[in-house]
Image (cartoon, rainbow, N blue to C red; front, top):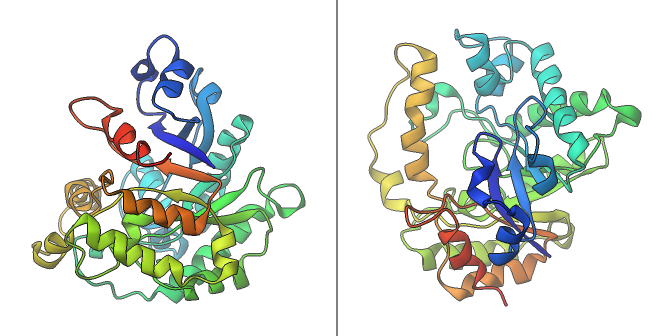
Length: 312
């Protein structure tokens, strides 16, 4: 089991000082999961990268269903992966190809969709099954463009709280397992995202108890497929119950960027302090534990060191 620190190609490597490997060893990190872009990473990043998190476009279905939002091409890339089915497939292949030279242990893809008009709403009109079916169709088409129909590295699908693969039980996984046509795939369970699917999560302990109960009920097939865990918690139950809903208005690009504060308040990515959280990892025994944490003003490594210290 390897413990990874999260970083991004949009962040400076100076964070790690003159000897990045020594810095990572000093905080007991086995490497980095790097959030990539659609282009080759700058020099230096590949040497530190163990796994990658591929770019996420929150409303790719808008382009997949040929009803793209009216926004500039550079924005549409990050909101929809493009403006047509052809562009969606091409751009996902492009980001996979850009990451392939780093030979990552996996590449994370979010297996869900957030309709832009519903990003600031409590409920979504789209059902998870239809999103999963469209997602699998899209990923199968992406994979078909690689030699022998297999991506160049393992693609692991991550749960979210929007329609798609939520993993509150095993049914979403069973559907993905039925529909994905290539072999080199797996699951990345995000514990904070799972908490955001559940009512009554007001404290760290609430979240730990709920997630432990859910993963204990997973089938052996699902547990074996979870090769990675994004480890953090969100105790945003009160905010989810009380935030002011907003309609999509004005420029779609501006509305999209304005949603970041709302999403980050809901999806807190907080570091565990209760040692009982380790039980979740004990149950799943993943290959990678990715401490997906933002850091604090006291230092970018603070949250990682706090959470990593819970593991002997």
